[in-house]
Image 1 (cartoon, rainbow, N blue to C red):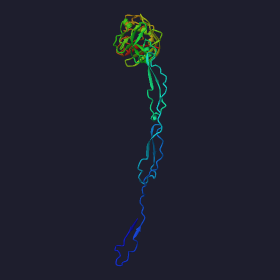
Image 2 (cartoon, rainbow, N blue to C red):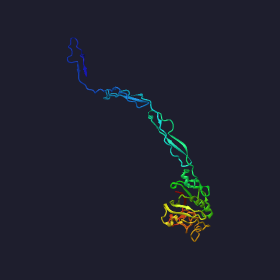
Image 3 (cartoon, rainbow, N blue to C red):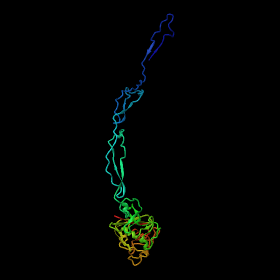
Image 4 (cartoon, one colour):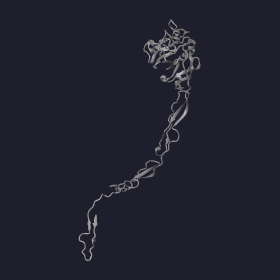
Length: 369
């Protein structure tokens, strides 16, 4: 930096001499370095198209390095990337494969549905190719062999006629008539025909023999199916098993399953059941098992055919395959659940260990195996 002075204080005059010395002085000065503003490099080459077929985009870029911004210099103005539309080749649309074989009919008898499938392949669908036109599944009605007339709830399940428990029509083989029964299609795989159901005491079970033979109650509530039908439905070459479900006043449940099971024809409708094959919550004391009544005839107060010296049905207020007299009295009087009484209650010694405690529910049912 520099400075100057002039010979003017005063200026030489009237022959006076000029000022002596330098009129200009200078010295070095140092400031902050100047900023360097950024500059763009040349554009790089265009990149490949983003798609292998159809319309896509290509791009190229450049960098702010010619020079790089330094010392608070400005960054390059403008875009670092540039794009343009590209189209390489026409995309290939999808084509259907051959149909698979038809699947099996959805039912084993009667009218059902079968399906077959195909797949949409050989396409570049992800790159603008069109998806195959049409459906990948085809269905048609199939007519399997003629369904046999359902004779039991096991047939209802086997033929696919129903899949939830409820009232269904079956065919009675001896009397040659259709009847309504309650089918349990859920317990242990289903297929059970319920022939005794008690849960609230709304139906009186202390009845004469004719009632037990014909059946009573309502199929949608408490009922006894009837000895005559029980004989018809358990007769035949197929082996049957019986399941007995009970529930105590405290909600605890138990069951027994016996095999084989059948009820002979009248007039006495002798019951046959032998081996206990499954059990839960029941006693292991043989005397208390339901098989105690194997070979017994069905007794009521007006049809006394038990092996005891007294009339078991009259004494214990029920209708049952009494022997001398019972290990279970599931058709006895429905009392307040949990009541401890004499043997005339709806009770099962195999559950309560020889304590006559009235039960809350009882259900008896059978099925073919």
